Picture 1 (cartoon, helix red, strand yellow):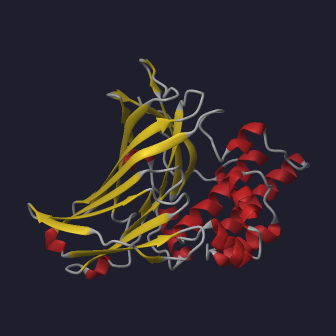
Picture 2: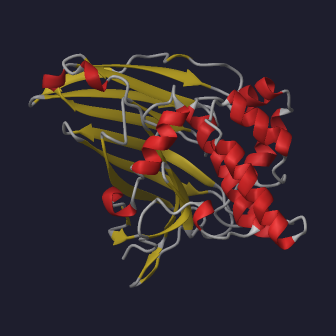
Picture 3: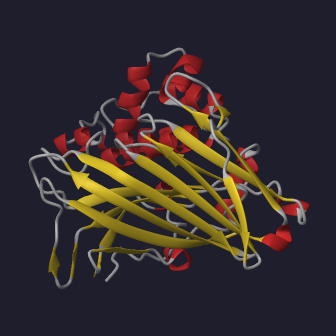
Length: 334
């Protein structure tokens, strides 16, 4: 049974009083969301802001407290439409309520490896499929995970992030405030070893979700023990009013094989291209093109790479030549 099915994504930090730790976490997640939407590495953002790359990493992981200067520069360089600045204001308000500086609890300092002490997950095969039916996108993610550590792993972090108008953040933010992503419409499901996986929301905002997939359900627990490899699959749905014409895959764990498949109605006459961004280089064309196959009135595009670099981002974009009015819509998944 799925957990944490809340009323919807419209509940933001400003709708209720939050702790200093929660506000700081929201600030860190907002930076990560906008950086990924813009397709910038931590190194590239740090250079643009005039900071050391490790500082951006520490800020996103929660090891550094939010600062006014960082919030201002991040908002400007990511063209975030004052959303990062607003998160900074929420943090300051929370800090003022308790009239003291907050210290993050030890658990939040483990953000870089958030699964379990002594765990080390490796992705042996990452297969993503996005299928469009003309009005909605269905995203299905399959991952073969191996625990190379010394302790069982009991949870896995995923992200869902969309941005319909990436060139116009104020318009995009207004759009999602009026039409937020909700848990009901996402209809998130997850399975492993034939068992349903529970999930818990970590961050729930209008256009951004972070979710823990849990290796347990009402019938029992089934963690991934050291040396084990298991397939997990999770899927969700997003309408084209909230999605768009691109998605991005971020390599956050050591990965041996990455595969992406896009499936569109052939009648829309879709074309696909892509770019790669790494920690040391800006966006450049994919080294190999997506392979196209037309079958049963659908057009399939498949792109595969092996041993992608850690923290690399692969962004595929498309255009429906038979429906140009949709060309400006944007979205992403991970």
